[in-house]
Length: 265
Image (cartoon, rainbow, N blue to C red):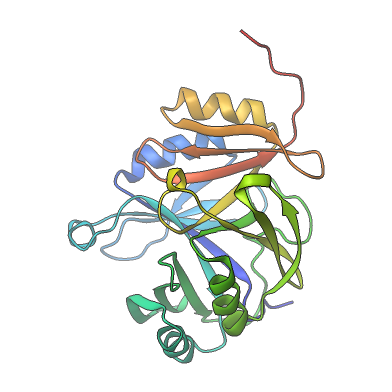
């Protein structure tokens, strides 16, 4: 079944050191990497055990000069990239990278919502097949398991994404002083929207990738020079999640089972 308008279909890491990032994530997640074969660009395909889930791209000097920094970005499928760009701009969003065609891949554009959170929109070149980069159907090791928007204005974010992608609110979890953690449904539950704090930085999307053992992954993050900023903490359903920062400065999330109780001390 082909993906529909509004689905997350791909994830991309922009990084200042592609080889170092490959080594880090290869150790933390069960990922292997392959050169995309794109001339003139260091773009590496990220492969989970079952499927390809994303790409890793080195930030070029020109990109850095225009403000690019290490970050994870999600791709949302759309029926018409140019029409969606126009709608985003009319809705107080902005174009970060104009629409362009990538041979045998599709048409893409990088945009930002009205609060400034960047993401890609994409119409794949082929309508055959289905991306499972976001594993909406079942838990898949190495795949994205959750998409979390940190925003400065939840109500405005719901209006923006709902109007353009058909996303709807499907309940919420009370987080006390941090407010409501509001779930996104688009067929399956995609993730959630929450109000950010100053400590969380500017509005952005967090992606949580699934690991087999959250404590083994935490140890790999720390051994590889990354930082565990929060967690692991238990989440509804019995899994555990953590938020981390890779050695180049990109924020990421992990989710997985706890196989044994961690040792204190």
